[in-house]
Amino acid sequence: MQSIRNLLLPLLLLQTLVTLSRSSEEEITHIYLSDSNFTSVDAEHPDSSQLANKYSINSFPTIHYYPPHSTPSTKPITFNGPDKTPDSLTIFIDQSRVGPNFLPLDASNSYASNSIFDRSDLILTLKSSSKVIKLTKTLKKIQALIASFQSDEIVKSYNPIFYHAETSSDLGPNCETDCLEIWNKRENKRVVVTEFDDADLFRTILKESIKPYVVYTQGFFSRCQTSSKMKKFVVIFEKEFKITDEFKSLDFGNDAVPVWVDVVEFKEVAEMYRIIDEKAGSVLPEVLLIDVSGNHGTQVTKIVGGPVNPLELNKVVSTCLITESESCTAKPRARSDLAKKIYSQEKPIQRLVGKTIKRNILTSTIDQFVYFYNEGDSDWRAMREQYASIAARFQIEETLEFLEIDLEKNDIPLKEVEILSTPVLYLFPSNAKTEPIRFGKRGIEFSNEEILKFLKKHVTLPFRGSFDGQHYVGVVGRTKYQMKIYKQSDSFKSWWKQFWEKKLTVMERMEIEEAEEEAKKKLKEEEKKEL
Image (tube, rainbow, N blue to C red; front, top):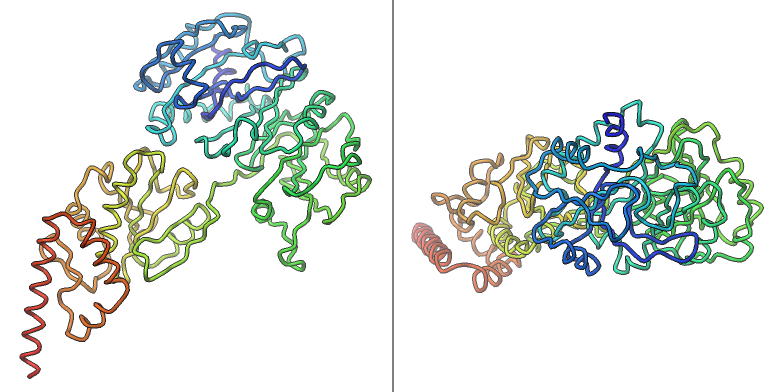
């Protein structure tokens, strides 16, 4: 039983947004299902409502266990509640397990079947994406437990295959048709294809292939894991690239099968592997051949742009493959919006994306207050308005910067930041960027006064404005000339229009009115002194 558990746990990998489709009459069945045996279905997806109704699922997350050789009509064993521990899940699997011994991914052909459940154990998790941004605390603990098994000698040779996407937006607007996980029954493996233009060609490749290649991709090629016995490569081409009949007729032999992944952000992939030709400037090759191998690292062979010569491509393929590869690992690519951070004095909040957050946070010499949010949260807009009202008050300050990043579209390459729920605020002090200070548990639960109190306590650099008690007053303490210049600025006009007329509460207006009166009195006193 212990050995069975050791083999099973490494396959309970990262959670996946999936849907199940009908089995094709062909030998190859199209399934929206991960090779990971720890699989998740968004409870809000139309296809998942039928499952939820069938098993009377009213709360999330809920874990269902399907024993080996189950059928679609088999009623699963339920493991309820988000408060369960990884140890409890392990015991639950051991006690619930029935059927033959576990079969690894490279099982014999006799194990293949037209039934999507007729394979190794399957655990199906239903979750609500509007309430869970990434993983619940329980699932995160389970993930850590699974990761600890990756170095186990017993499971090293299996190289589990998985496909991971946090939300439906990662799969694209037409994920049901554009994002395919094609299951090759002959080899008991799947291939993930993102926005593949010629699905019929891909089916033919898989059907006739002896050793199919399996790709892990999130939007585009980022990481892959395959059996150590296979030679492997992936061809990446631009969206405009046309697959000709001549290209289809290429013979790649029985030792390797190509996977064509249509990449929209082709330039970003090229930048990721540092293969842009500096002499050619921004001109990119039309086709890239990436050979991923554990012993030799990621090798990229550039095929010159223009019409592809099949003979030239075949020659590159044959010389590029490494036969003694023991594993398949490529550096994972962090998700990032295409938008770049542009500083503007007219914007109280600057926007960060996955690519810029690390550089702009760790290299900055000022205090930075960052708002982490997810547009899937129901309360992110209310929190952002509250955050923006605070940012507008401090807009004249050069030592404090207000930033924001959407976690639904961007990953955070900062190990110092742990996001368990959103929205949330972190202050990165100027003198301790690697030791950010979290504001409370969830920012939406706190008032503006508490945020101001937090900033007053933790910021490290002086302000132009001043604090009146716990309230920041940006207009107090200026000379007559400074006040005149400030009131003529666009930042003051924007602040006045947006937050005086629309956003501020009655109490806040009264407080600012009092501050303005104090400022006017001081100006009059200064004018009298000048006279």
